Image 1 (cartoon, helix red, strand yellow):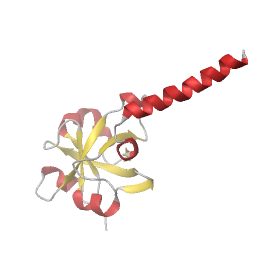
Image 2 (cartoon, one colour; image 1 turned 180 degrees about the vertical axis):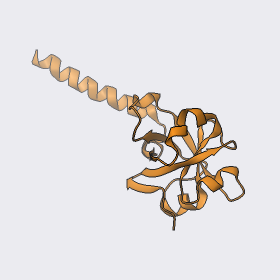
Image 3 (cartoon, helix red, strand yellow; image 1 turned 30 degrees about the horizontal axis):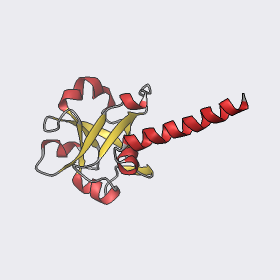
Image 4 (tube, one colour; image 1 turned 90 degrees about the horizontal axis):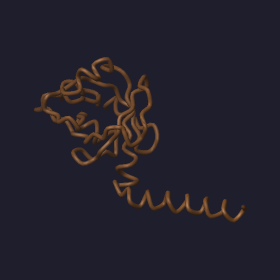
Amino acid sequence: MFAYPIEVIADVYVSKIGGFSRELGEREIGINAKALEVNTSIIANETYARLKFFDEKPHPYFFKRTFKIIGLEENMEGYEFSPNGEVVLPAELKREFRRFIGKDVIINTVENFRIDYDYQRVIKSIFSNVGLCLESQLRRN
């Protein structure tokens, strides 16, 4: 059994940062493929996630980076950094995230599964709700 990722609520997981790999692109993170299969509903090489570090200052939602989750196989360079399902970051981010090795990270895949990147529907919903609020305010005055 693998220690990570641990699902804390639906489609949100906690893991640790294991290391860095040159095989990963700048917008990719790697996690042991077997750990993904056993512990998560994440679909390797298809699911996108946003990462949140516990020590990190919160950024506005739409400024957070989105990463494609890659399933690390035994023949891949970053596999040794994810023996228990730890997150492996691309080598390009080493300078920025070096201080997080061994620290907890939240892997948020909610928007991938719930919204499925259909932001047009979300925006329409927001505007329709705002419109209703504005309309009711205008009626009161």
